[in-house]
Length: 302
Image 1 (tube, rainbow, N blue to C red):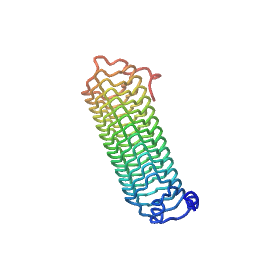
Image 2: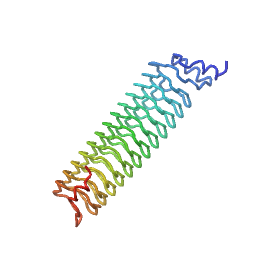
Image 3: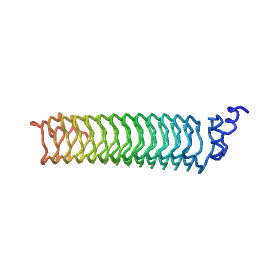
Image 4: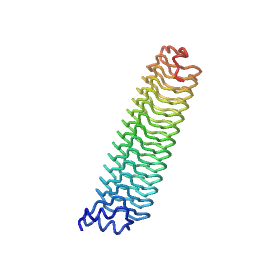
């Protein structure tokens, strides 16, 4: 029987870890739609394996090499992938709910529309990964590296990105309400049109970040660095920017009514038609002129 015929006969088959390893070692790569529940495949070399639509719940793949693997539409609920190598892997529409991906290498991996709810990606490497439209609600990305990753229209509601690196990342249109970005780096990141209501960016570095047209209502930006960032046409109603750096920040046509700007540094900020109605500005370092603090109501972002 050829490898191709053998592989086709495996579809839907329940395999043991030992059987999969044996067949992989003799050259088989196609294990599409197989089932391995609670199997131990830790520390295995499985580069290039095809596990499309496979059921792999609770599987232990810790430390395994899955470089270039095809896991599209696979079910990896509660799987252990700690320290696994998944660089350039196909994880489109995969279900990784509550999976352990601590310190996993997912650089350049495709995770479009992936299910990452409550997944732990602490210290994971996700540089240049594609996570567009992924659902990572409640996921943990503490200390993760997402430089130049694409997360447009992704859902990261209540996700924890404390100390994560997102330099040049694309988060345009993402849902980030109640997400935690404390001490995170988002230098040059794209967040245009993102929903950031009640998110926490305490001491985050948003230098030159683009946040045009964002919802930042009640967002915490205490001591955040927004130097050179663009927040034009955004709503920052009741946002907390205490001690924030807003040097050369663009806030044209933005709404900062009821915002806290105590001790904020706003030298050379762009404030054309910015609304500061009822904002707390005590101790703030303001531009020499502060035009149009309270523009007509027709100009307000509600």
